[in-house]
Length: 565
Image 1 (cartoon, helix red, strand yellow):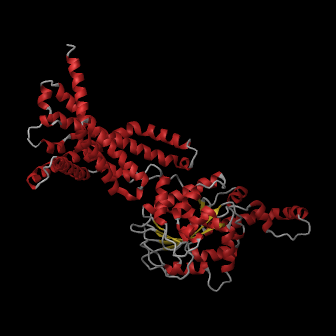
Image 2 (cartoon, rainbow, N blue to C red):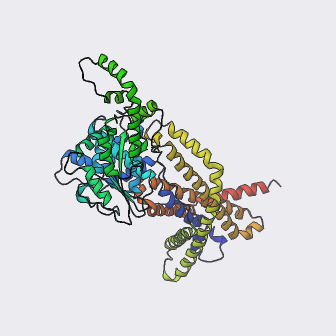
């Protein structure tokens, strides 16, 4: 509003109730939400890995310092170009899930150095090395668990909690069996505790089981001991995961190995053994073995003759038949014409949860902040910031709260309508652009497009509400002039509406920018940025004369049109 349109003599204070400033208050609440959602799931993941970093001890070598820098290692691993395309994409998805899980408080990476060591191995180790394979299998399984398992409230997944049974800040009880093989340790919502051992291939587990049968204290023995120590009112479960579904699993199916494995797993029908993308029970694996033997018996003689002819001088073992016909689970099912086990979901695209729309209470809170802030700025600029004007500040604070609450409620009603009308098209366009980017971000096409849809519809909704509120308040303030058809009043409404919409749009953009750069800063920083930018645009338009310039231009145009008649 222009000062000459206000009835009160303290015109500078009245800028606090200007519609543009009030709409900027509501934008602060929206910016706080948007700031918590950067546009790139990958960027958010890298920030999560920054939280997973550690400080190398004084005098540590170059390798120890490099291992401590979790964010750099994660980024380098995602950018590797020496992996097959499918594996490279799988690695990127794995790390995106884990980095976002750190920010979301679903995993504790600080129990020991295993999490950082595995990131370093994924970034630097040769793809076929034991270090790379071990890190890939454990980190991929951790990402799967975090995506697909409903963790108990107040708990996190413990990554490799071996050192003295320490479980860090996971909310999980200490592992009460020393040196237990628990690559992953977590608690599900039903109260059951789970430990999981991860291997790259089934042959690795088979070799371990073979050694466990003769060892005095074995890993499967420790796991069996831990499982059977469960209290009556709690459950404990032991799982095994093998990453490579193409590895030889024939020796895993031997009766001694399955007997040893059942000691740890316990329940023979529980599907707690995952190979690649299928989960099996001990009973499933025993059935594959029995069906394979039945299939082999009538064919073994002819196969042996062919084998010995192709391998002169070598001793034949019946396992060669199984390696030729049933080396992997997939090959076994094709040979036997049956399906065993059940599928396990693939790791899906990383999706950042869309922030909730601001509540009426949040709108009122930020509106009050904006009203008070602009009021005090106005007083300070005019040399009137003193106790005698405290009542006016409180009045403008209350007015800002009312307008902020109204704006928040309006956005809650309007934004879903905009999302239904525009959202699908925005999401499709975003996915198309991301997929053509030809960079790591292309892997995040689905997650990025959802984020773009949220930001666009939020910005449209909050800006539209801000414009309507600005127009409404300005119309009320200029009601006498509008009733007379006064061109100055019409110009004032147009200017206030423009400034109000601009302040809201700037607030939301600031929140999104802050969230993309420093997403771990979260709501508080986003709210502050949105509030400062929104109020700054609104008040800056007043003191710079930009708002008056718009009003004058519109007023002049109205007078020009009137002159035609």
